[in-house]
Length: 67
Image (cartoon, rainbow, N blue to C red; front, top):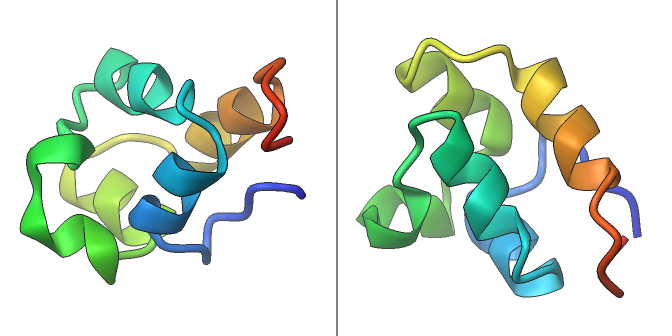
């Protein structure tokens, strides 16, 4: 599975537990946000003024099974 900026934050968190650390390193407290279930990674990144492509690149670099 590859992470994309169009997938929901919740989907990313389910795919790989390491996604939480990636989001938090960018100031995105997505695990605590109710919008994470439907909000895309890109929408969350925009909301937090973060580059979505950087977040996705880090997610795709995770060594976990979800990638």
